[in-house]
Length: 158
Picture: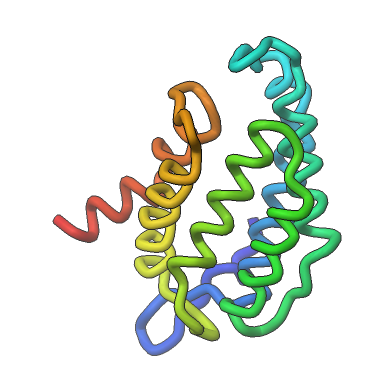
């Protein structure tokens, strides 16, 4: 990953809009590399082997349709809209709801700290869980809950 993603400024690490866009760009690259594996382990709700395909399709829509800006908020707004419009399958829809939750929890900052990003992830998880009519373990919801930003947020708060 590019060292430019996390910068030091005023003794705080932060992420701006261009950095956020690059994070999704890198994520798309890695999901593309692991797409077949994700398809192979797909067993819920139906073992139809399309989780990797659907998540990759959603991420490609984000990267291709979003408008990046120096502002974190403006970029996140565009990414959220692209995710909701381009979501495919269960994994894509859940991920799009997660991105939408990030946008709803965010203010209007041009840049945010890593700690602020971690707090957005926690709020977004709550939004994602609430947006599902029947939240079930073993889906993207579990992946989001088990990520390191939720653990970072717990460390920061305690």
